[in-house]
Amino acid sequence: MIKNMHYHLSDHIYIAQFQDELILLDTKQDKYTICFKEFSGLLVNLLEGKQSASEGKLFSSSSAQFSSQEQFIIQKLIDDNIIEKREGRYPFHIDRKLDSEGVSNVDWNLPLENKKIHLNFSTLRAFITLLQVNFFIKFRGLHATIQLIKKSRKNHLNYIVPQDEELENLANLVNKACLIHPTRIKCLEWAITYVLLALKQKWKCNLEIGVQNYPFFAHAWVECDGKVVMDSQDLREGLVIILNEPFRKLTI
Image 1 (cartoon, rainbow, N blue to C red):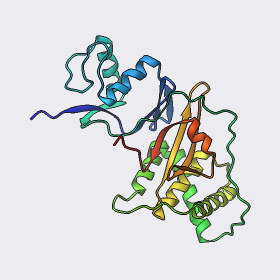
Image 2: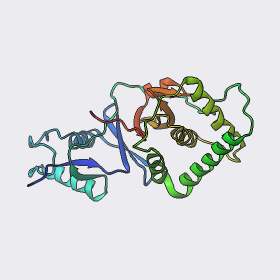
Image 3: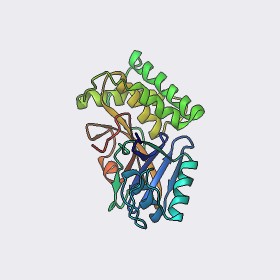
Image 4: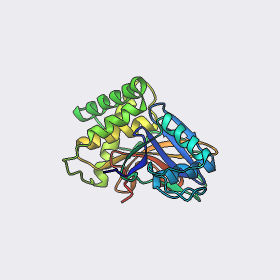
């Protein structure tokens, strides 16, 4: 029996569409790529199994006919380990902000609250987690750090949505850890640290990375139940979400 194969993104590749262009995030190389319009259309159609404009064929591996240009691009994507063939349709949602004008003048700082946090076991645990995140990002790279988040989610557990006060209390702990860290902490490190600590408490929190092009800008934050934690909701609405882990949004 011949299995129906389709094109999928490789596990280390994430994409999103801002206006009429795709943006690719290669977590192994920690690199963003802005794709021109024609290429963007081809790649989206490949992943969604839509028809080729030139041949009227479905973009699955069983399709025998593509234009020579399409064949070249598809083979190059496979050779570069951007796409691969798997059973079933590509399952993940591709976020699109077709009409967004993006954001500007963003200068992220620690989301500090006027609440005094004492040094105790909880702040020590947050500080150790922050050190772990810094180590992974610096010495093992973004891909390994994302894998750490994905592995921290246990599929057999039921994750909950905590109260706003609980979310704020955890943010204050992470802030305290950042303040005693010897170097300045960026938004990505803060968000990953927060998500790892939240997962340990069985909270359904996501690391999200939003991007835009022209001018290019990327920002990381924590999302819980559709809301941004201790950051501006406008960022989520203005930027296209290219990565959300470990509770990745599915097409169904």
